[in-house]
Length: 107
Image (tube, rainbow, N blue to C red):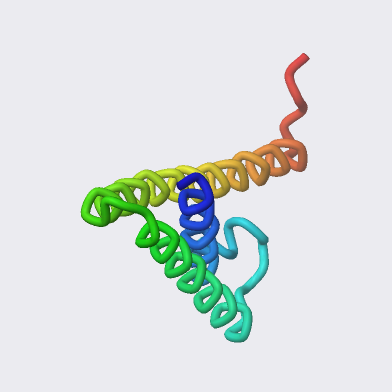
């Protein structure tokens, strides 16, 4: 079950990196179409494998509910990570603007 949870997390993160906006905030350069396709295919593949792992367990209806609830948790974690990356990048750029401004730093 833990392996399914981790595969979901990595798969969802890869799917978010397949979006140009999230990729730019994390890696500070543009996403190429080939990389976008690779992230999408691997992300969906990992989500599929995590679902198959859950289907092998019993009782089946309970495991499907477990998988969907873990999916919601992992989506939240990936959203927090992506927003953290965006805010961290903004803070770093603000610091560089302050350092390069004509106003002398406070002592």
